[in-house]
Length: 69
Image (cartoon, rainbow, N blue to C red; front, side):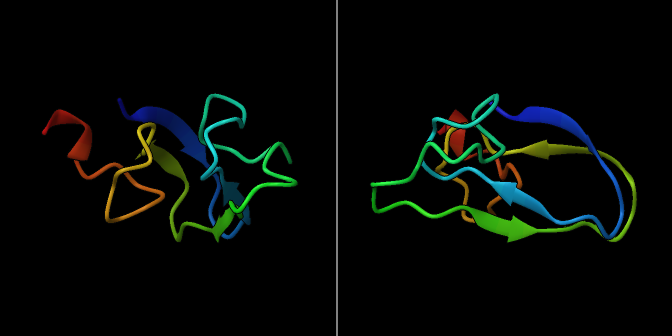
């Protein structure tokens, strides 16, 4: 399922790709010792975004509805 978050413009975030991060979307370093690395990203406009919670999106870190299919 997508995770709704509020993001600030021009701030760097790190999307969790190992699934062990806070709410499963933000890296907390739990990937250390695995083959996973976080995905750095930022947004141009502050606001609410839906980040991928299933890690199947082709548009990571954003949800593209892959969880539904």
